[in-house]
Length: 240
Image (cartoon, rainbow, N blue to C red; front, side, top):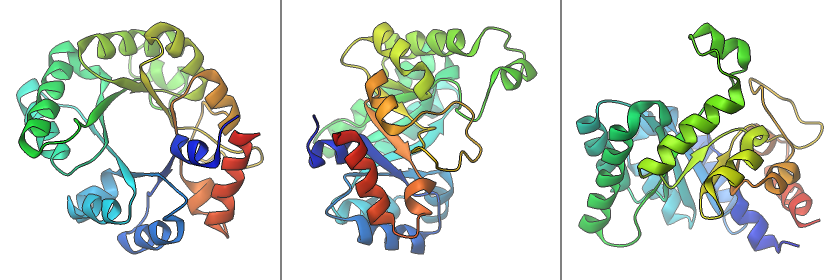
């Protein structure tokens, strides 16, 4: 059975909102929440200062930039992103073993430059907004689970610390990658919550039971009438 602190550490609150709302939510949840996700919209609008602001509030940061480019560019981009002090950074699993190895070098260079722990890298497998029809549309005919496994093996074997996948693939990925892999799962919705644009979803408790390390949860918390109560309810589900 998890303690409240352990349950909190499993939840990454997705701040897919304006800077003002992000600060409001961070101040509201500080002291309870452990992690927030800063995505592309917020980071591109506010830059590295938004990571500093979250860390000043005692929050750890998953910087979800889905970095994807040629290896040289990725190495530099990951180095720069890691220097913000982000704890976890996402890269794309489609970028080849050379790109992922370059990302790892960039993260290691940043850690050496600023001291402290290296930013952990998680590779995107198949976006949770995609289903089999969406994969077929871009020319991928293999089943979703097979494509996730292929990309996960490539990424983890090339230097990523783990992967991002839907809760539906979490159990298979845990078996494939082993106990040390960092498995981050978006597409997590408490029972009765709106699904939104997610296709491959599960409840928080089911995702953790399947082997997820961290759960990315946005609107069920940030869009709730009482975000603190919504966060507490998810923690209670994980503690049950």
